[in-house]
Image (cartoon, rainbow, N blue to C red; front, top):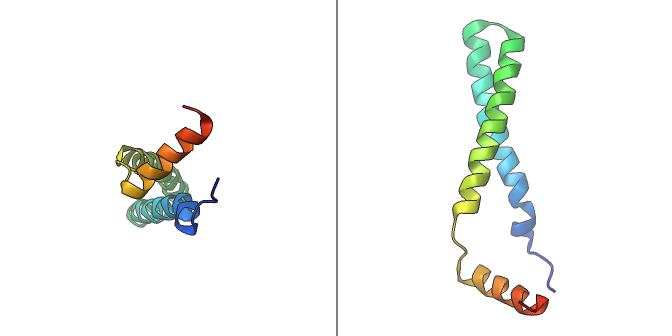
Length: 81
């Protein structure tokens, strides 16, 4: 079994980073408009979780490319399916 490429290994970190940036934006907007730090942290957390779930669902909804499909077929053959 081949080890995953670097791009495949860093994919979760990319999703976390994008979610963190979106959450930071939402938290800063709420903090700047209300001047309430606790409310800003609450919206940061809510936005982080919501954006992470949405991005993960979008990543799962994508169809595999040709190379990915070949890799999935190869793994199925190795497992005896």
